[in-house]
Image (cartoon, rainbow, N blue to C red):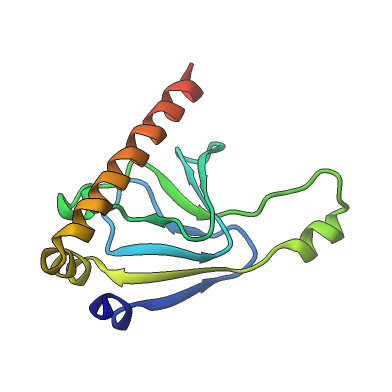
Length: 139
């Protein structure tokens, strides 16, 4: 998978909450969460799902079918009510995302169909999980 790694770029986001991908837009990149967390939200509401380190987003289905995202992806800072504001601020870390351009990613998937199949399955599983959580949040 050297084709994949040589095409990765690193994007660092400050400790403040930052929007990485707005809802209603198509993904230009496939993202890997290297450090920090990313929340998946509906509009400006509470997170539906929080992606930890070693997660990914900009899923295969969204990239392959050029789908607009239904969700907003933001860096996530977990506030701990047991800590003071100063302690919480010190505890925040920057979020580092590794990303690869969607067209390059899809070309690599064509060259490595077993890996692409695995990513498709994981993406579909997560899509179902997100939709279940959305349905529960809407109730």
